[in-house]
Image (cartoon, rainbow, N blue to C red; front, top):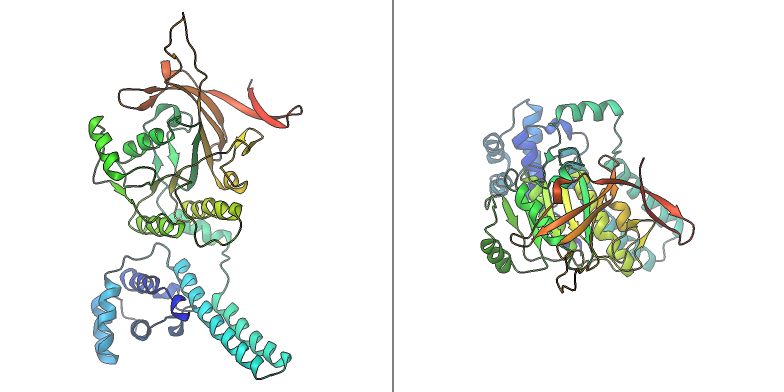
Length: 415
């Protein structure tokens, strides 16, 4: 069991960050050698401390020279550490490292408590032992709180968040140029309305200038490539990364974290129903809700855009804002919700041709980026299967109000 409470990849990434960024000072007061799982990592960290005490600048070569003096056998561990990508935020990674250590200590404590209970020791003595251990763990974790000034200075040093121009006019225009990073966007719609088509259209456009990550779980990669070739899609093939297995939420989250470490910021997932959550043993609603909360946290903490194609049940909409299937919390976690409506069939002059077959109504019922809700008629080009805004008409801005008759919110024209 205790072997499962270790994250060697995290430890290597953490040590790689210290060495390559030469920023031991940031974490020197909170991370100890005991926080690492294996002896080789402890030795590498000890070598870093020795060098810091002598005011030496860190590098893989310098740390290697120090290890040859104190423990040459650990050089193999340093080689693995050197191959790891540095983490984006070393303080957050330090907290994660300590969290893993604390879990191991709690596991050891649970074994000790069981032994003391079998020995019929008094509850007061056992409780004291628990307090001694847990107080130390709390102190080790420390506080994540920072002053407003610290956050301001930190973000002033960071590059501005990218604005992703989707290449789809009816979205870019109303979002003032495109989608800003740090958002979970739910793409919903009627059956066969074109949710996947809109998402892949945006994905292909974004990939012209940025790395993108796609989870096409609803179809095979072979079919995806074949269909793109038939329609002569313009794709920057080296910028579009695809994951076609590992359907569990934990696998998806892991791939997104790796992508973000390499500098990627734009992710699309198709779809909610294909993403599994085997590690959640709660209710069905809790399992579904965790998908959205996990993705929202990743989007916010790693400053990503995540387009998540989401299904909807008939009973999942209230108040005019669409809610994902099986979870009331899912819609709350989203920064934006886009919904594609199919129009009712319409025939003229006795014709059996539906003139509304390729028309859609795009509705944005939630928009934390600039707070504006809108709807606009769009058309699906049957030749290349891409959406356009017919006649380039201006989207209608809408507001949602509560209707007392049926207790839902309906669109109302703004003045």
